[in-house]
Length: 454
Image 1 (cartoon, rainbow, N blue to C red):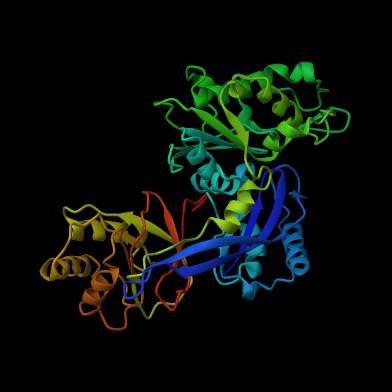
Image 2 (tube, rainbow, N blue to C red; image 1 turned 180 degrees about the vertical axis):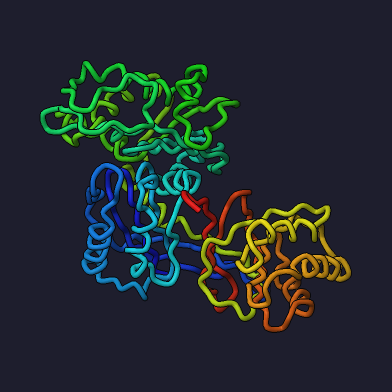
């Protein structure tokens, strides 16, 4: 599959194209198991400054023009793209016309592209794109990955096996204050409330900005567990932070500010923001007393993650009929074993009877034929109120989707679209994008995501 990754960040906009190689890794004469075995980056765009119309408005036309030209330079057409992600990250996701940008670039989306990302997905993409999973595993340490960009710092906590176990996001970044070439402040982010910020129009110096930089670094140290948590950290949290018990044992870094940790840029005004000074402050802080490493990607970590690691594959025991792919932004309704039918009705009532939702079943014990039939009957009963043309989508962790789908097919109207897929864990509050089947119809490409705006 050809995959695209686009990161519309607070400071920069960039794109990559990758080739994902799929293969059936199951032994002969067993149930197929499709996996993504190889990821190859085919094209990396230039790094563009994210176009803005004033402080609070993205320039949708200019962004579309940048991406259209990058498609041309890469020799790619939208119809050749099967998967990937367009993620609007950091402060950019808060801009007034973020939706308009998505509409302006929708013609580039190809068959299947995620068009939004919340902080949880962004944290995962940055960590994966930077190689934090393999680093944590090779070190055998509980590792915290910090992706420090223009507007936010995304946190991903990994265990010693390289598994991402928690995510978080803080309003700490290099472009929260902007300055002109003479050092005059032109913008101060409202997320810096309560801190020692300069005033717009004031001429700043490294010395005058030192108190603010110390506060931002202290917030990072509190998030890592190197200082006791205070209001300084709590006021910077955008959605959640990570647990520091047991303690974090190592750190890795990515993002635009992280790229400056190694560059040793002498001109503190080189980028017209806090980036150079913030990198210096981090390098001199308690953060560097822990074992630490720069990711294999720094400024490109999120876009590499979006292009290479946003897509998962469902299990290979799936069932689908009459479904028209792709399906975008299906809200996940997590269900409990008790009162399953009532839970389905509540999920439908919450999200609407005329829109598809993903019914995430709790993990089931091994079911015999009668148990599977009863489960199908319960689901069909709970979903009776859903429109006859609305897809019924059921998601499971264990491999039983084909058998369950076959049982459901006899219980719901024959014209009703039906999708059952397995091998997926869907956290509460997540959304799904589903692409057309691959591997001879044995698996569905899936992106599990949180949305920045819904």
